[in-house]
Length: 127
Image 1 (cartoon, rainbow, N blue to C red):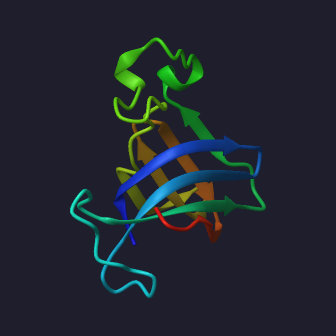
Image 2 (cartoon, helix red, strand yellow):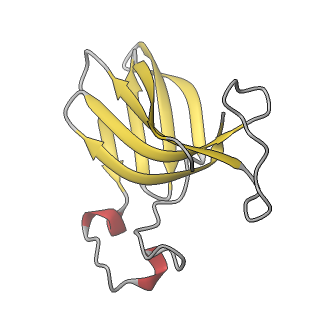
């Protein structure tokens, strides 16, 4: 999977977890990869990526995400008319408060999560 080119469609955060609904870009090495049709550049798989931790997460949503307004065309995908969260532009291992952690960032905001567990679930096929 190539996370940097994947599209974030929705985000749900709680004290110790965060879930991203994404259209994940699958690489040719992925077992469910299919060559894209002529209308698409990538093979996409709608999925959930769930990050969980025994420690509180630090999620700082972007200012625009705190005040989503459907009339703001800068945040609306012109094809689907859905909110455009962008992608995951940064995904790097860090040390946070003495613990191994991950930093994720993008147009949607910044996330620090210590000692994370990750689950990947296919949301719907045929995308």
